[in-house]
Length: 144
Image (cartoon, rainbow, N blue to C red; front, top):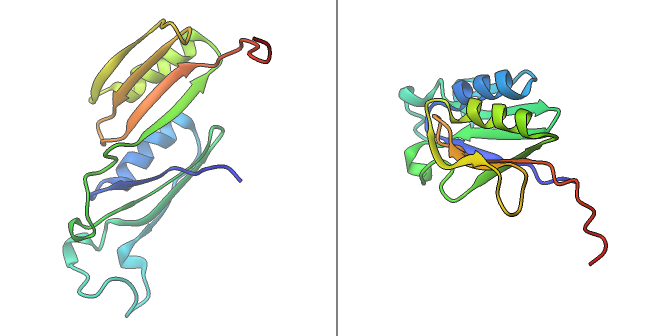
C-alpha cells in the first residue's frame, strides 16, 4: 500500500483542497465537525470550529491526499517539517505546476535545472503546504 500524506490545517482545509482539486483534478470529499453525530467528537466542541473540516480527501491521478483542520488545542503549526513531492514528465509541465502551487505562497528554491534533476523547485503554498516539484528522472540507474 502507498503512503498517503495527511495534512493538517487550522480552519482552511476545505478551501485548500478546493484549490488542490483545481490543480490536480478530482473532487474533494469534505466532512465537517458539524456532521458528527450528537455526543461524538471532542468534548466541548466550540461553535467557531463546527464548519472546520473533520476530514478531507482528494483522489487525484497522482494519488490520494487527505487532511483535517486541527483545533489549536490539538497542536502544531500546519505542515511544519513536511513536504509533498510531485513529479511531472517534462520541464515545462513541472514548471507550470510549480508556478501554480507557488501563487500567493513563498518560493524557497526557484524552479530550475539542478545537478540532480532536469528541473526542481520548492515552495510553500498560500495554505501552508510545502511542495517539492521535479521533472521525472528517466535515467537508468540500474548500472553503476
